[in-house]
Image (cartoon, rainbow, N blue to C red; front, side):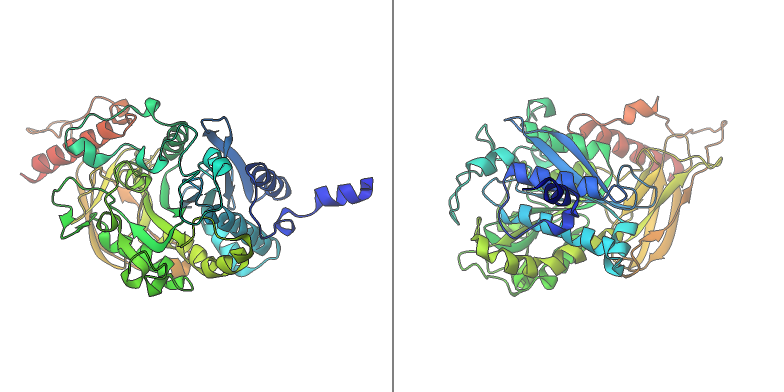
Length: 447
């Protein structure tokens, strides 16, 4: 190849260099590097860690401010190839990156609206070591596990195991890929997520597990946000070419409308979906996107067409509900304020992040919010929430907290310091403190 031709290849837009075939881990990394280099205004490539065998776990962020969070812009993520032999998801994410970049560079309204209003993180392969060992069989499990032979979707801390009093393993002793994702979830306040799998055609939603308590309704394990989860699953299923028909894989389902509660399908301990929801306040749906775990390469163009509309529609759901900040009387943001919605008692209460922000995915309707923080009066507000995805923004609603007067007969309990609220490896201490504060504050201020 002549030097001019070589230079033209290097300088060609990354979005013009992706074809429909299976890409090796090295090729995935090279493609992401090209996208990053060619689109510095909307792309940022970073690693969240390494696999057991030392391969980088690359994440590409796309958005108007790709390198850091912007207040008011929700964080969204797609994760694929958690099971190394379930491979369609990683190619779908590469195609989605290609599609969004092409659209943005081409000044297409749909892409500009998405990337101007959302920061999207793509982890095309969570299990690159497993992918290297995978064969092309549709149903066998070779390559499913990581290099240590561990199923990564059974390796996360499990809230229900903890509630049963079972000792949980410290996060540091978990698989390298799981540690990387746990650490990732602590760096960003993700609002919505999907985890792409293969071997079925269905959108599965939390909970995946149960301890037989109040969450168990019939054969399903329901979250306090069950209505939202059902909506999210249906958004993907109904926009898919045939997922909504249910039972398309023959040996799976039938799944009514192409969705299922995870526990009702089959109980699962240590799953990433429940971990995201319980401890990272991120609603995650598991998307089974192909009957065959390793579809023939010639089917990739059709399978991309089947999933493209769903992938884009699901991203827009990050704008459901309400978002905003919690402020004190001086206008400063308040971190770790608990923001609860009446009738939705989460295992870990949703709380503001380091920016003082909160995000609550909610369907249209009227809701009552309660906001609490040590040393401040309990705040309760009721208001209506519209449908945000069509406008590419959730309702913005800031909450203003007032400090408790210094002299009171029954002062509201005040925790010693903000450091008391920091997350333990499994997040349990934060949940316990938040729940304790909420209960004590409510009892003091209403009793």
